[in-house]
Length: 167
Image (tube, rainbow, N blue to C red; front, top):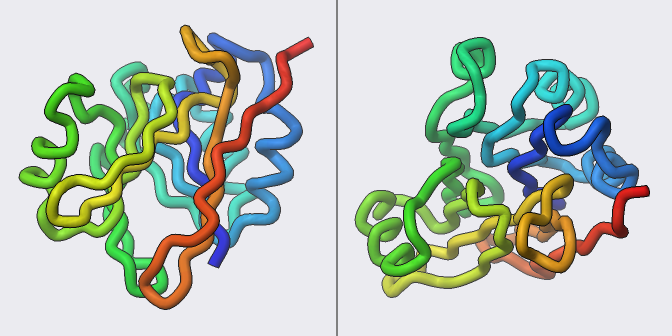
């Protein structure tokens, strides 16, 4: 099963449109996970129309309309792995411990908010993944998103995709 992970799309505040590479990845994925900060409902509509399956949450910058349509925390089991999705996890210091305590029933937690790609494993085995942002790199060298494969209860080929600079 092929997954695409993204977050913090911030359309139209940070970009007028989503990058072509991201859209092609959405079309190819079996499941798309979005960890919040959509900004407008049209972007959610686009993801719903293009994704075979969408698992998504709202973020701190998302208004009432998005909050009515999306949960704060989403959970899904995919190929034997228990995934959770949340926008914010707090400061980087102590993140693994906090998340492992908050989500003891998960194998993988996808989060956003910082726009900083993150891939660590907490004591006890919880894998934490932040795909960064495909539209707002902040202090990072590139805008990014993640893809991975899930098979037989295991993550494979976790790949950070660096997007070309916007024109």
